[in-house]
Structure formats: C-alpha cells, structure tokens
Length: 404
Image (cartoon, rainbow, N blue to C red; front, side, top):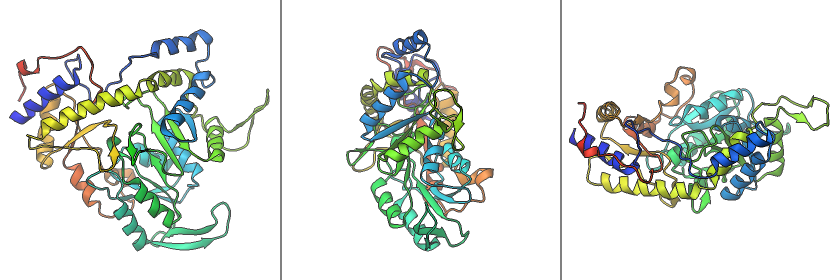
C-alpha cells in the first residue's frame, strides 16, 4: 500500500494539475485557440467550409511527411473511409489486434467485414509481425483473381473462404508497433496495410512518422489526444487518387456543381468543421512543445518507477514515442485491481487497458490466435495520468490523507 501512496504523490507533483481529481489526460490550450475560434465566428465560416480545414490538412501533411492529408469528423470515421479506400468490402476479413480501443474493430465492422484478432508484442503492445506471419502461413491460401479492382494473387482464409482485405495495426498509447516488419509481411501476402495511428501523432519509427508506412494511415484529435480539435480525425496517404476519393466520400460524394445536387456514390457526412479545424490548427502550432512536456513527464515517471515493484512502459527500440498515455505493469491482475481501486478512491484517475475485443459479445465469434501476450498484458497494464504538465501549479501531495 505504501507504493500506491508514493505513486499518487509522484503523479500529483509531476503532472501539476490544479484539480482535486487528476484526470487521465486533459487538453492544454496555450496558444491561438480563442483567436482562431473567434475568426470562425466573425466570418460565419463555422461548418465544413472555411480556410482552417485546408490549413489543418496542410499542417498535418507537412508535419507527418505524408503527401496528402484529408480531414474527417473523428478518427473512427477516418479509419472507416481508409478501409473503404483500401478495398475492404462486406464479407471480407481484416487482421488487427484484440488489444485496442473498440473504434478499430468498429470501423472494420462498418465496412461489413469481420475482424481477425491476432496477438501483440509485449515490448510494443502493437500487432506482432511474428503472430501475423505465423497465422497467415498456416491459415491463408493465395488465389488468382482476375476481377477488377481486386485482380492478382490474393489471400483467402482457408477456414472461412473469405478474402483477407487489409491489416490494421494500432500504435498503442503512442508506442510504435514494428511497422516496417508488418509492412514487409503484408506486401508478401498482397494485403493493404492501413495504420491506426490515432494515438501516435508525433511518434516515429526509424525517424519516420507513424501513420505514413501503409497505403493509408489515420490520426485522431479527440479531446484526450496529444492535441485536440474537440473532435476530429485525419486520413494520411501518398496516393493522390486515394486522397481525392477520401475528400469526395467524406463530403457525401457530392459532384461539384454551382447549384445541382448530384451524388455519384454512397457518401458520408464525415467532413471536419471549420470550428474544429481552427482549434486543431492552434494545437498543431504547439505540438512540439506538448511532445517535449510529455517526454519530460515520462522521464520523471521512468526514474521513479525504477525503484518500485512496477515496470514503467518505455518506448520500443529505434522508436521515439509521443508517450500519449503512460503505462505501468503490475505483477498480476490482483495487484492491478488493488492499484486501480486505491488510486481512483484517492483522486487520481487510472485505468486498465481496454477489454480485449474478442471478449466483447459482438466480436466473440471472431478468429484469434490464442492471444497469449494480449491476455498477459490485459491482466497487468495500468494507465496513469499523462497530461502535459501545467507550469506554475502544484499540490502538497505529501500532506494528503488517503482512503484505504
């Protein structure tokens, strides 16, 4: 119990949050947010038409190194569109990880496809290349298909007969998965790679930004992300045709015309509003500052946990993580639950990792590979407060009375 109290002390002094209850991740507004929002109101451009949408897209493309960025109303919508553009169709199957936020699996389901949940690596918490390659070698047969646009030798599940239409690794808590190895395996089996980089803006693998390794990638700007547009997402790609299709589909597939309402396919009302984009632009201007603050927080946590029985989760080899959500590993599920109960009772929000997707009723019949590492992590991972520290605040945590 003494280490639980010490954890609360380090959280309160490190995050410097001026609240009695420390949230897991709060947004920080330190720049031009009010100015840009006022500009939207003054010009009356508050919906999906306005200069901030294009500016936000350009800023994200330039920062990540992607040739094109297309804004969407949230990360889930962005992933839905990315999967459609990758060619995923109803009755297809998509490989992903069970250790992920439900938006990953939901977006796959929106296409009518079915997820296949494979294991993660313990050192990244991201989809394991070894698990993916092993499953593909055992469960997939390549068939020659000559029907456009899916011509060529394509992978089919030998058990279900369905096509494996995409692979979606997720960069968990901002820590990059082994993405170059995953891309090699996907290329070998002719499977489009779509990166769920919702949590990893600013994270790099071998110096390259996450979200830019696959055919498409997506980002999220939800209120709890490293930067926020209130609600928002972004589709990243180097393919000009796909970028144009993304913009078309997210705006109800409307054909440009001065007055006629003509739509050439089923589209989606997924376009980001100018108000949200204005907030996103202001946040992007301070992204490097937020990354610096969060890195300093992670280093402070890392130093503290060296002398405890908990293991602080650090960035994988050859990676630079944005440390979106800091995580520790407990020794077992019992200690995990005791820590969660004590910290939340005493004003510090902590959370376990998400329930594994295959344990949820709507995905309980999906194929898995046993998920050995995923189960091990689910029993031990605890997220601790990870907001960018607030300068000038502090709390006398050492004088607190704790509720046992």
